Length: 150
Image (cartoon, rainbow, N blue to C red; front, top):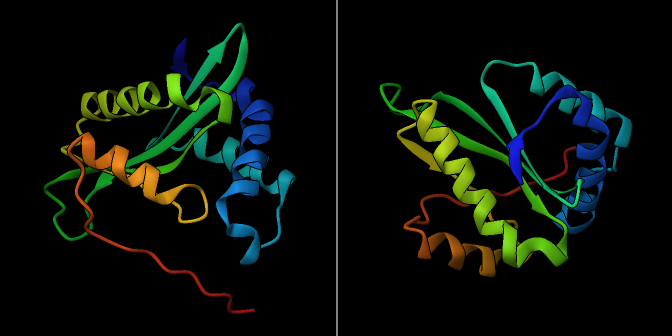
């Protein structure tokens, strides 16, 4: 079942966030911060621009996604949904990952978004995820790079 997340979901969202962080490649750039992640999730969930969905199987959360809805920076007449995260426990990716993506797209469109941007992390099967996006009509328009400053 896919549903909107609630503040009560923060502990489970943070658990999934820890699994995501372990796969993401971010650990080379920043230390994990589980308590800070939980605080960020709670704060973002209360921000009007942010929206979160969760996937439950047998009453257990196995995936989640978050996105923000804002005017597109270069073209503010267009409302853009920007992925914050999209993560499924590995054993549920095949059956539920695409369904969660579709639910995100539908929710974003219902909230007025004209476009959606998604991330494909290099360390987390980026090429596979990129092919999924392309099959769904996405187009590669940007690459992101990260560098430690301290």
